[in-house]
Image (cartoon, rainbow, N blue to C red; front, side, top):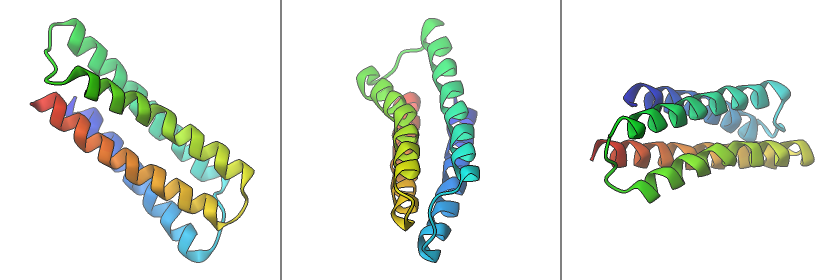
Amino acid sequence: MQLTVTLTAILVALLGLWALWFAVMGRAVILRQLIAGGVVEVAIVAQLVVAFIGVARGYELADPWTFWGYVVTALFLLPVAGVWALADRTRWSSVVLVVACLAILAMQARVWQVWSA
């Protein structure tokens, strides 16, 4: 689980920095950033699969509602930001992507805390 959390955190941090650069430069989100968001989504799905396998094998979560809530919310956050980015072709789409990335980073920290507790 540590590998999937770390990989997801690195990918989302890189995407967030890229979006931050675009926001500072006053540019809207581009298709390559949305594709990178898809890569982050794949990492979150992998995390979900690893968590399901761990729980199915008997791993006890300290707070299952919090854990699954963070993982599922993280799964839906980037697609919502992506739809926003397609609808709003201003620099604010980049700001929305930055905020989504920051929220997912915080969720990844909590996922790791709950998993390792």
